[in-house]
Amino acid sequence: MDIASKNEIWIPISEIGIQTFCEVQLKFIWKGVKIKTKKMVNGSLIHYEKFKKFERQTRGLESVEIINAIRRAIKKRERFVGREIFIKSPTFRLIGRVDAIEIGPEGIVIIDDKPIEYPFLSAKSQVAAYSLAFKDKYRPPLDIYMMIKNRDKGIIVWKDVFSEEWFSFIIEKINRIYELILGKRNFEPTSNPKKCLSCCYRNFCKSII
Ligand code: SF4
Image (cartoon, rainbow, N blue to C red; front, side, top):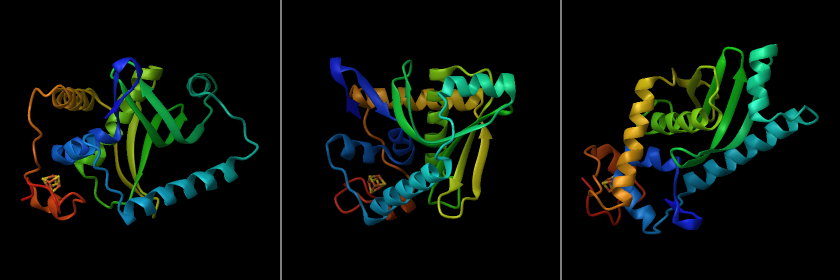
């Protein structure tokens, strides 16, 4: 959680995925207990290298604002791709950085690279929240698709359209996070012991199962 100037609250989109995984993790993070495992540090490095490779591959190409890319995709059927794109939803007060976005006449694809082979709900929630933020910011007259790719193999792990159902699902997540911020309810631990097994807070979490 990030309290910005004027005491305005902005929710980092990664926290939507964490809330879906286990709310007790959010409690630790908001208290300032942030654990960076070797795996996480390695993941950041891989993302950075992917971005550098993308920069080299696209050097010399035209740089286009997202809003213009959407217009040109519709009018001229052009295609655009970008990486590490900062996104901010003014209505829902979400902020985040999307791994990759593709814009074309058939729609917009919001892509998250993850080191996973299976589309866990926490991972899907994060992409859905990016999609909500994108829709809110740019209001594109095109369908938005959500995609999770395996970070290392580049294969598609999951793809779905950002539907009304996903919209409602993420709004509920945002509301739950605000309730936690305002102290209106308790942090709910996961009921899945497998999550605790892989959790970096397991050594001092009293809710561990
Ligand atoms: S150990 Fe289990 S209950 Fe505790 S924060 Fe981790 S996932 Fe949640």
